Amino acid sequence: MLLAACTGTEEGLPILRLAVLTNGGTTLQTVTTGGISGDPAPAEFTVPVTGGVSLDTLPGGGRALLTLAAGLESRDANLATPQAFTALPFTPVCLTSTATSAARDRLLTLSACLNGPQQLALYRSDGTLIWTATLPTFTPPIPGPDTPPVRLAVLGDTGVVARPALGGGSEVLRAAPATLGDPVATVTTPLPTPPIRDLAPYGTAILAATDTGVQTLGPTGVPDTAQPVAAFGTGRVDRLWTNATGNRSLLAAWRDNTLSGVSSEPLRLWDGVRATAATVAFIDRLRDVTLAPDGNLYALTPFALTRYDTVFGLQQGNWQPATLLSSLNDARAVTWLVP
Image (cartoon, rainbow, N blue to C red; front, side, top):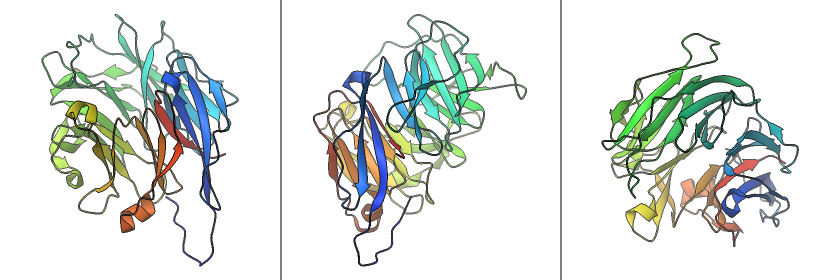
């Protein structure tokens, strides 16, 4: 996180570009924030995409990772110069989600075609393939409003998958090469766990969002109730977001209001120090969050992108919300870039 000392003069904020995946995953667009006033410019770049799933930032911030149903690619800060990652050695490819390591140097993606096997692939951030793995047969439960989602996390060259279990709750699998350099990873037997709603890297650990708060995954991948993140209490958490930049690791958490049945739920932020996570805002239908190195949190709903100042918010409780984009249509993901 970048902090600026007060000098008595108005100083420019670090300039970042936000990339947004919108229109149900068919459009990428950008908006630039920063400058002397901190006011955003209108969206500058807009490009069509096919089968957009998610966005993330690659090391250095100069390129975005774009997950498409058909494969991974990176784009520069102008959404140009697409570079495809190494093609996967299986067909068909139906990517549904991607997770990055805390340092963004490892990328774990999942292919799950209808009536086909679940297949994992671990990449380096330069687009080269490290390993692939086919997961044990998955018999999903009948979908319901409270069925746990499929979530991914990566720590080193080990991938973790949490998926809904047929008998209720979740099951966790870990995939890693038996020998360094093996192109096919070994997958553990699924372990039953209470429902896992989300996974996120935090320092040298992986955290799980559960119905009883945020907990650290143990060595087998099962949430350890003896290692909770006490700052978030013992209530249910559905989504987690972390940053991999700056001097402090931030952790954001949210309870899905479409499942709780209330009009909005608090987005909470923890700086790794304070006893209780701070409430940033009450948000309806939060889709994604990116914690950027300019000291701001950017929250995306299906309809709008809003900026919150984490420095003033954590210090003074003044989050200084500002709407950067509005009138979006089914926006899905957001990430930051260095233009």
